[in-house]
Length: 221
Image (tube, rainbow, N blue to C red; front, side, top):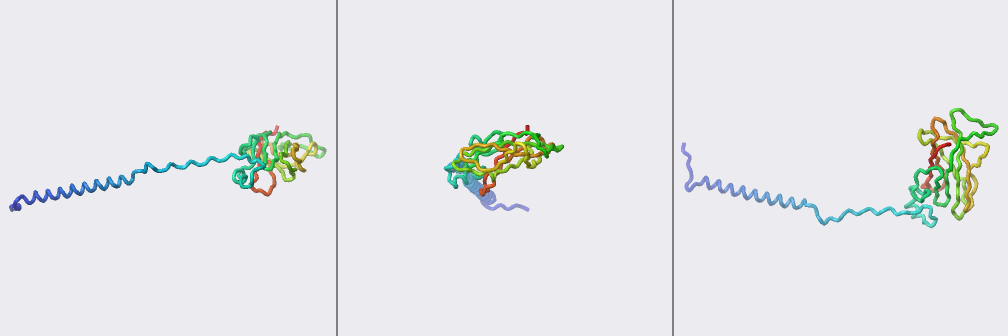
């Protein structure tokens, strides 16, 4: 059967029209992609991220601080170490100052053996005595009746039991006048299996729940 071709080359003409339509469609697609790509381009003029404001340095032992300043800067770790910095574990002999001006330092811990008439050593237990020094740098008397200690092993766990040996005891009590420094004793018993390295927390029972309790680390000699 013969193929009938329209006069004037109708079939090639139709192909030409189709090709032009495809070219036009392709051009439109390219323009659309270019427009979309431009929308995703980051803004070169975007504002830089704001740097955080540095934490203000405050001396928490400064009696001139008002309550708002103290709560903002000192509540999470109130008081200062010997250098006025933030509170951390302190070595024996280092001073810690509470916001009211009372300073404390655990001077030493020594094995105790100077027993009284009704006292004696217990096998497997280490008797010891702390020397704790207080200085009142404020202008008012400060009571020590709310001061206590909590002692535990620093390396192998364990908690010391509180006691008071008869000879040479000078328990932490009474009131400290302005400008006065005094040294007291604090006795304890720790099982020998916990070693001789200890942590001494000096606590003050005050109305302020955010009051820091300094911790002193050292060794029973």
